[in-house]
Amino acid sequence: MSKLFEQLGFAPAQAADLHLRGQLMNAIIAHIESSGITHDEAARLMGVTQTQVSDLMRGRIDLFTLDTLTSMLAAALKPPPPAQAR
Image (tube, rainbow, N blue to C red):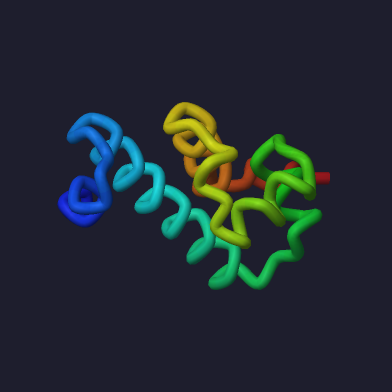
């Protein structure tokens, strides 16, 4: 896909960045959708705002850095803490 961005006139480094951000966004979106959680629950899980989750779900790649998306995906995939015995 980075070749597509290059064909659209982006420099190779920028094309690679866009490609990686797109892959991360797709992975986060797939996880949210397969988990069946709400945008609000996803926001709490990932430590971002509901608006950011909405922007992500709408494909607003321009609003997210690689660092932010990596952190969001890591938080989304982090297993929940074990239940405490009573």
